[in-house]
Image (cartoon, rainbow, N blue to C red; front, side, top):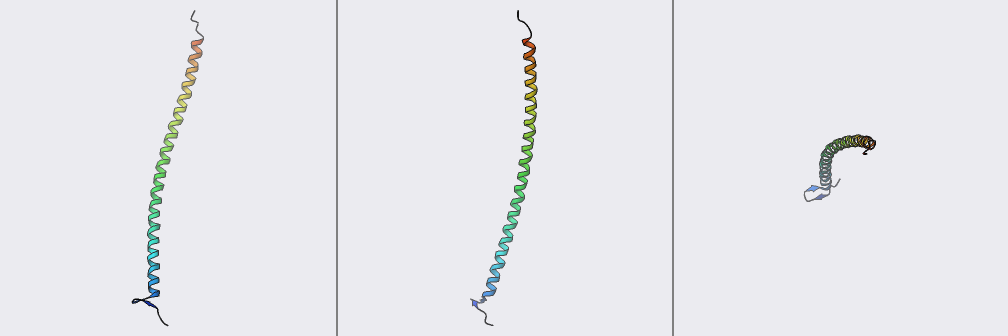
Length: 85
């Protein structure tokens, strides 16, 4: 069997080394993407918590608004029943 060479290395060895190098690079890319994904998931969790807090605060504001409206309509009804004569 005749081996083909480039320089002093057989072509098969060169191809093998290139494949190994590509696999290492792919593994590093996957590791990097996993770390970025983990970071984005944490950021998403934080933003969801902040959104939940804002939603709870809005519910409280809306409740207070309704109480205020009810109080105002009660005050308006009470004062309109008094005569200024």
